[in-house]
Length: 320
Ligand code: AMP
Ligand code: MG
Image (cartoon, rainbow, N blue to C red; front, side, top):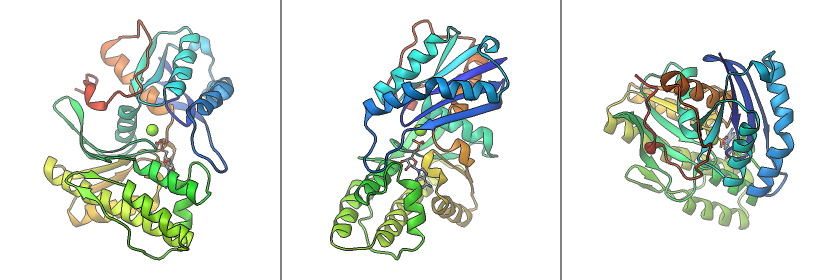
């Protein structure tokens, strides 16, 4: 059975082809800028411009064609409404049975598929989300989160100030390697983290002459230490002994290393999703779409999208 998958929740338009659980292709095209941030309507225009190119590339790489495809899985939540709409409409145009997939749950499931983690505390850090998650009672539940902006967003906003373009996370990681530590506000409230004060202070220090290197280094160290602290607390609270780092910010080596160190000290094991499946991608949508379809054989009668859906609204019926 062949599943074609479409990802379009935010900056990335992706198409993947899977044969049952095996990923045959995973193509993406990502909206980027030299200076500014991500504007929803421009992102939607980007997706419209590249959708057919990405589709053709994914079919070609999988050595197949549209006729062979059995079902189409598409990301239906959460995300930017104009971007979600492009994906949903494109999925409808393909005239196949459709399966709608929650993008965040897909990030979690691809992490489980591609690592040895069994029942971890998920550290989900992407552009729009920062959540500490665990699976309990038939649902994924959020135990802690960023109260104002997500860590990826905070990195991208800092990057805008430093004129690094979008996405800024990878550039900040490189620049940080030459920096020294400057104190920044460290804000953990129970299981939650707050990044807006750090952002304001870092931008202020940059305006006053601190170097890009020192700002990037200190920003990363502070944000990642806060996340390591709440992850440690979640391990104890949920009585788990595995951590799984997923989402675009999981590509950051320093972050992964800090979680590893914390895990070792507690006799826990930390895993990081492979680079290709860390940021937004369609393979994860296809994988979860296939799991859902295999479990309940249901397809969408009225394909819709849900920009603000939360993961604890979803019953994980595909898990035994
Ligand atoms: P996602 O929405 O899951 O695709 O994640 C995108 C976010 O990941 C953006 O905010 C990027 O800046 C961030 N990101 C990507 N690579 C890195 C990296 N190496 N270090 C830190 N953040 C990163
Ligand atoms: Mg994402």
